[in-house]
Image (cartoon, rainbow, N blue to C red; front, side):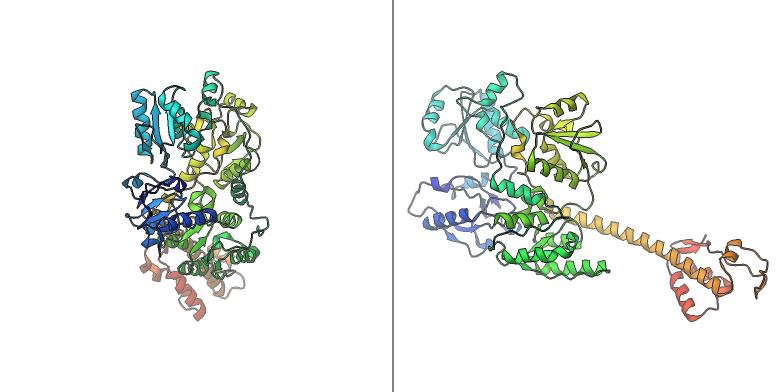
Length: 578
């Protein structure tokens, strides 16, 4: 499928009475209700029609590249953000993308008075990463790169800035966007006529002036729902509104909801969902897992804790929406069916902690309130220990900027000081990354406050890549097979030992006789000169054909029940005489 990106529909200049004639659009469910209403009105009044199904659409309009059903979209379908605009019929739509890796999606760049070498690098980078480039200052230019406040292009852009909303920025904005891999890097510190970044560089300070920021309501909802503690009560103060649209929701066994299940199910039903019944037994876990796997066919959404198990792999292959409990609460909190893959804690995690995290300590600095708690949650989710204070045992200090006593002390103790991008990359890749391996982790001078960008990244659609899923499932099945074989071996040895001991005692021998292994007749014994069979003469083998010779002669004539038990135990393919 082709991916298109942001150009504002409201700025559309009609080239005909119906510029969107022939467009069949599908609005992704992850769009906010206000955007859906506005887009529907604009599209319909300009000649577009709503597609009957996702497969029938010529254009999918979304704010996420992992929208519901994204795997089913054909290559001929254009996927555009909610700000598409007059290029909807242009071949250039293929250069846009809602994919977060396309850092300059929607950016139309132009330069003034830059060196040719610099301009070639910037223009090539922007076009390669989802944007467009103009040699002339046309009306659709969104970013003008300028090294000084002079030149005709600069003056013309400044004159029309109130109408065009063009950003006039230092080339450093491009450099830092690429270096950090951020597709939403703020332009304010780089904007003319007085770029704070330029002033900071001239003073050789640590970066632009720091300033505290109030969290947006959406950001607050994201952090609060991500921080839910399973030991606390289920959040239930959600408005009664149709969020799930009749979608069927299966709550997985790994959630271990217990008595809280009823509250979670009530919240789903109150917000328009249908709960798929899943009965849990108290003892037979294997039967529960089979039932859970079968129920995947009956659901649209699978909520689970771990990225493993037959039910999970089946849900991925079937294209189901898969999310964590934190995602479920977030959707109910904001009233929008957002995509689980777009946030780190909204998608199930692997069952086992990543290598290198289980025995390390990490602390943070200059992240406060819910931002700090969010980082703590990610650290502990990966199996590491969060420490409020810093000691020489800490493996890393995660800092929003390098001001403060903690950061200075970390340098003195040779503790790496990194931004949260390091922790997010470790989470996405699910293994420990050396903090010094990339400059983007340790360079805290680029932006004034890294906490602004916390919570903006997801695990990405590559998590559900079919080839990778097949590989992981095969590895998991092999591990389970080996674990069952080991368990069966242990049970077989224990069973045979118990049966043999029981039979020894039934034939007139007790544990002392067996342990002594002597020929002398015990006082009061009815049989003399009989040697007790050793209970340590059996162990593992892969030769079932020798089971007959394992039956000691005194045990050849046994009660039916005992004989049956011994025969069953000796039928194990793992037993032989030492």
